[in-house]
Length: 229
Image 1 (cartoon, rainbow, N blue to C red):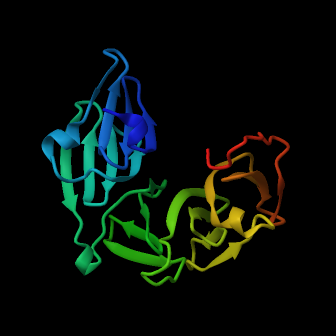
Image 2: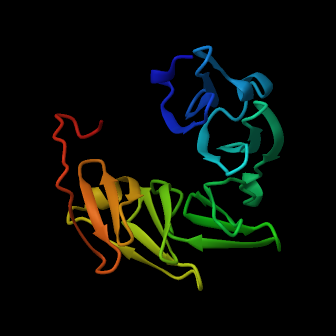
């Protein structure tokens, strides 16, 4: 498997394996004991599930693999495919898992916003974050975090940081940087403490205070000759 050419998008590690979601070769599994790679989805579905959008490991042994073709429930204990759900884009039937919260609600970001699915009562909700035409660059959700009853979302080609009220699903868009390109190209974020988020753009690291809703540059900045790395 020529991994450098296949753009690894997601990584999930377990005790025995490292699961890599790629853009061209589907799910690639690296066994830590044998030091070998294998491709369980490509072997089963040779011509589909090659572009992985998300990998999410739930608290049990399930790894939820979201591809452009559908959703696969993969058992990490047996390394076997449990279930497969196929997308039907023409009918806007898109299946995927980005996150499963403590209430068992499934969240998934796709295209213009978020899908929220409650398995206990089969209630679906779509939260539109970016209203775009098909001619515009697609909005790609990069990270979701829950903090103090709010859901925070960042995305590539987005307008900034989205703060979503989980009670009524209203949201506001927050600019975390003065330069438009940084708000447009947010890549990752992490919870620092009960009040602060660490947010990475293509070029800078920012500390965002959720109480004041103000951001500042992190003291940790690494200069590199190419901002595309």
